Amino acid sequence: MASLKKIFIDEEPRKSGTHIPFFIICVSIVQIALVIYTIVYNNGLSPMSENPMAGPSSTTLIRNGAKYVPCMKATAEESLRYTVVCPSALSATSKTCTYEEYLLYVCNVDNLKGYPYQLYRFFIPIFLHGGIIHLIINLLNQLVVGIPLERKFSSIRIAIIYIVSGIGSILLSAVGLPRNPSVGASGALYGIFAVYLMDMIRNWKNLSHPWLRIGLEGGFAAASLIIGIFVPIVDYMAHIGGFIVGILSGLIICPNLYWDICKFDNPVKTKLIIMAISSLFLLAFFLGGFIGFFRSTPTVFLSS
Image (cartoon, rainbow, N blue to C red; front, side):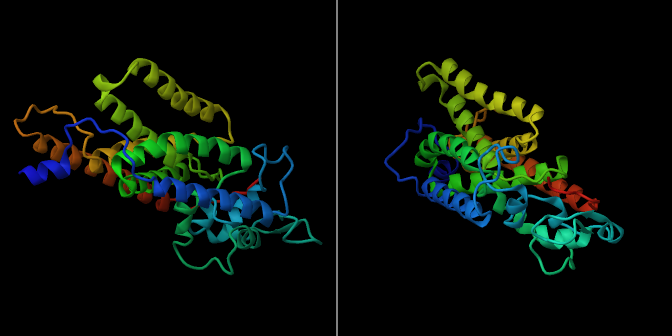
């Protein structure tokens, strides 16, 4: 029983140790490299009127793996024959083309056969960013929140929460905002931020000025979510999805995130119940999300 207790719960307040945050450092380097790559691929920065985040065009981001629903599942055959406005890079002589030709170009594929396809777009957008400003904002939050969390809970746990939250955020965005192409680590960051808040609540009595900290940090998350609802460039559905998945995955794999709500003599039982319930909700989130996503067929979506 002592070994189970060590695996599943941690009754001592966790403090940041000397563990080097390999995951946060590596993922930050990858994200910086990809912003440089997409800007070079775009032959420089797009005009600020087109991309206020100081980065490449939306077409460049889509061609390099952004969340874009028509590239992630089959499109109705009749929609592929529609005539649409072509990207300038696709045709120098004609301003129009078929929707199939448009998708062949923006999805960066040789053909549109097969179902489903380009599922990597549930993963790659976590590492892409809309531009330099977008990257700097996310990197600051990632380093401030991610490094102390990784030192507390280990690289493996934070990597799992980060990636799973990122995929969950893209899934909810693809279901809730299917017309909007999007990139960024914001959903994954909301996932680890959820763990950060739960850890703060769990160790409430050991914190100095806890109300001030939770007010500032929780207020920032709430403000970002509210702004995202009214500012089209911000993907608020991804924020919601990442936060939900972060809570559930954190309760499953972080050993000190439990509360003795059942008043059992053995806290391991409480932790196992919390893990089981969280696992069911997490499974329902992904199963329901993917079923809902693939049940519909996208019509004509054009990136701006």
